[in-house]
Length: 241
Ligand SMILES: C[S@@+](CC[C@H](N)C(=O)[O-])C[C@H]1O[C@@H](n2cnc3c(N)ncnc32)[C@H](O)[C@@H]1O
Image 1 (cartoon, protein in one colour):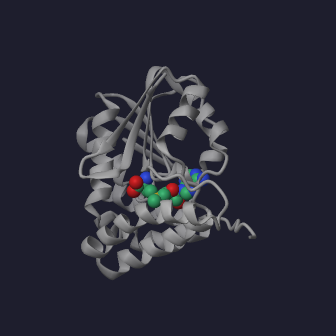
Image 2 (cartoon, protein in one colour):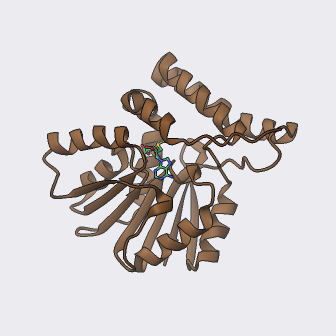
């Protein structure tokens, strides 16, 4: 079977206008973001990097929790446009700096951040190892890397029936939530997303044992994984430098 390798930027440009009204309406997504903020242990004056910030849902939750400074990057100009409108509306320009940049092209300096976080973003990166190595480098000693993701291993042959069942078991829960909480538009987006996961078309999910191994290989000392309460197929990993 031929692997699909389309650039995922176009997809996110299209999704941007609906994002807050589809995934942004699903309670599970907010439960994930809240757990990321809680487990990050963020303190006042921390410097935070939000990778794949989208429309800023996570960054705004960090700022709601405490007075920190955020650098937020995303590869989609349209997602950032929506986030920038929120920043302007809430008068937060002194607290959040946004830039259009892909995780693969980050060029920050060593020991720059106290917290580096990414929610449902890093699974879009195909080659994760160098990105996680850079994240380790950009964190100060004692700094924390926090990932919130679906715990779903989509590696393997795309047409392997066992792989399909494994992926569909997870996706079914997401489809049901999307339909219940975000209605037909959210379901349609999630369903399209599901196909992309099955085809590894811009979505390259791995399980949390694989994320943990990548972090340990990059040099992180303590790596802890916690499930999101009531939505256990999503998890949060905290890795400390
Ligand atoms: C599902 S959204 C998550 C947005 C936000 N983190 C949240 O939790 O609401 C995924 C985001 O990752 C961005 N993205 C996808 N691939 C990326 C990459 N390689 N580098 C940076 N951002 C990326 C997309 O443009 C999109 O805004």
